Amino acid sequence: MGLRALAETHLGLILENQSTGFGWPITVTDPSGNQGSLVGSSADISQAIDPETGVIVSGRLATVALRIGALADAGLGIPEGISDNTSKPWLVQFDDINGNAYTFKVAQSNPDRTIGCVYCRLEGYTE
Image 1 (cartoon, rainbow, N blue to C red):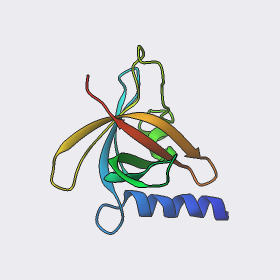
Image 2: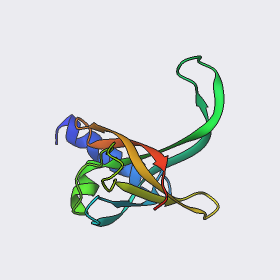
Image 3: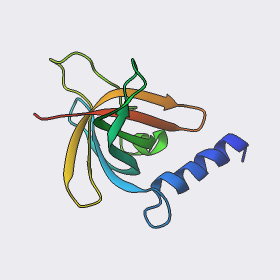
Image 4: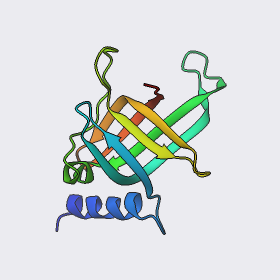
């Protein structure tokens, strides 16, 4: 096994292990309505840096990191941000640490095809 394949295997152990890693249940839905139950890393924090001033401001920054192989196994492609508001977006759902459920749309997708991970920046979403 080469170093890249080994790194992808270790990525799975880190991202998808719910008992000793960062694994957290995440549901991903593509624009066609295909849905997959995955395990990955999620974040939802209320502090951001204003890119124009560099000042810390109150805001919401939600992200997920998922294995590309797990998305493929679930019959999904790589999520992407869809800027057209008339089209259905990629949706991501997960609970916070207290069990409160949140639904987000993918605003930006940053796949790393070297290690097999996609990092998505999310926005709040209501239907």
